[in-house]
Length: 234
Image (tube, rainbow, N blue to C red; front, side, top):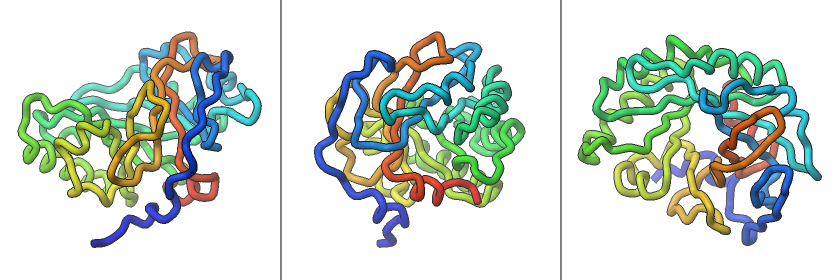
């Protein structure tokens, strides 16, 4: 078996430690040094400079995943504004696509490529796959793989998969273990209990940060700044 190159960077640390920060409105996993958010049009008009400048103790938002597209025709109406302004504020940016296994994966890939111009220093493209639409696992795996392979051809980097543990283990399984994983795991005071390594953890969907009037998803990166730099588009 080929072991993914990032496996060796991200060994489990000691038991994760949460500290309550009223400024962020949630308990934060302080074992991790690199924190970020993910957003879509539902966060409305974001002041990215305020997001980036907010710092409490040693915690600040360093990266942002931004919704770009959904299915074969939909584009997030706030994507371009968020993408441009997040970059100007100094955030490390990533773009994600909400995937449907009932839609043509090639057309979904084209939808993403028509909207997103990833550049050196950006995070790899993200496949947000979290709904089965009553499709069998074999269909979900085959269509997801097509999208992922199209992304790798287009951007010359291995895409990230975003999902939750149940969906990954039920529908994807070890066939996708060579892709970096961004895992959703809320409201529990321990790291995701996944059988495989992950690199991003979405640990809350009710965080607060300066510059955003709504609640927002909070994430951590499992590694230091040098490790993060290694997964960015060269």
